[in-house]
Figure 1 (cartoon, rainbow over the protein chains, first blue to last red):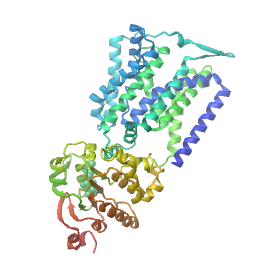
Figure 2: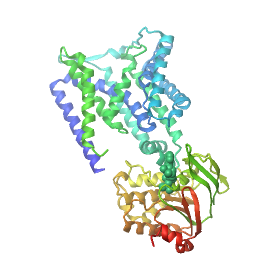
Figure 3: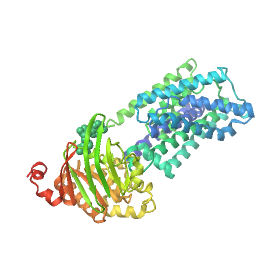
Figure 4: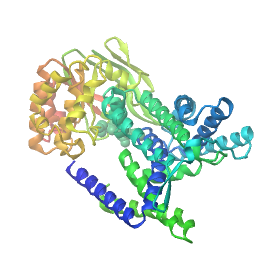
Length: 308
Length: 235
Ligand SMILES: Nc1ncnc2c1ncn2[C@@H]1O[C@H](COP(=O)(O)OP(=O)(O)O)[C@@H](O)[C@H]1O
Ligand SMILES: [Mg+2]
């Protein structure tokens, strides 16, 4: 405990120093980075939840995000419902979709080994993308809201205001999730299952119910993320797809079961990307930096914890 | 209380338990002795629904357990202290213990008194109650696993090789504690390779070799038996 507390403190201090240094050096990159990193974290949290507790790496994660974007688009286009209002129905629609996907597909591969699980979720990803192409074609769509393009000018910098909703929502979702896991009976059961599923059954926890609920909650959060993104994101069949890999990168960086680490890692990577993009001529390098930092952190963790 | 009739268990094609029958009465402490690989853990896993038997009956208080999910079997009043302990490593000692009661109908409203009881038997757990389970020593983890089992107010407590991996002085201490637990009237089913210590707390015992019962008798007779003395007590 001592040790993990200390290393958490060290990580936090390093994180804050990093933010301060960037803030002095490139304040605009800091702001953009926090905004973008907030989005990465918000989208990464549900993947982390499913991977950490249900033990499934969902390769269709980003495609369910795309699906959420389309559903939000329909709410807006057909019934003129603002994305920030359709967030509530979207949470429940995706929650329900999570229940269905878990019950008819995921439940069957829980004991089937990692390769089968990856193949299944990869297949789901393909099916969603193709279905979207059939139903909505590949034409990009977008949602216009007046508030999404508001900005403030500070000195000679112009900063988009709407994007601050990403880190704000990421923090809100994280806090609610932590309260759920620590304070509710079902959440405590979920924590127990995440640490030791066999041990959980042995204390009388119905692991199947826990898996179902956690999977569905994670999907609900994907719905929330989709709503929040919608005002600033073009909607097309692959809009969400790249976020699967980015979310997985965050979990690999934070370590399994470390939800707070998703926020810290997401913002670190977001800021690093923003710095690269602020250097003229190097904009295209941001993915290289993203995965470069990821690999560095994983190696560092492996070095710090040689016993595990 | 627990009745097993003609149980056969296989892993794939390999049969591990052969035509196994035992009876355990309420309030009794029964031992199952046998060498490594004899099938003791497999038998326990079959009782608590972690492996499906090929054939045979497992009946607990007139109710068949075969085919029930593990958590239902546990909620029916059976607690198990697994050989591998199966704790929650990133939770504190106290959180582990509380989880032992939280999901059991008869125990969930008795958490505080159960904690008190566990802490009187294992004072070390009280001292360490804010420490993460994963940072405890092997012996302390074993005690925590037993404590967590007791938190469920079980009618029937299964212990799978509690002495495994403990240094000899701790083994003696542990069996002292088990004696105290036995005095509460709980039925106990204990597997052991350490027959000498095991015999001290049981009323009756079975010997299992290669998945079959080769002997069953009272603890006094087992202790006297030439076969036990030669094969297990090294006399
Ligand atoms: N999950 C498993 N799959 C296949 N064989 C197993 C498995 N678990 C145990 N066995 C085999 O079953 C036999 C009995 O093992 P076990 O029940 O663990 O014995 P014990 O607890 O008496 O040491 C051993 O030969 C062991 O190798
Ligand atoms: Mg064993």
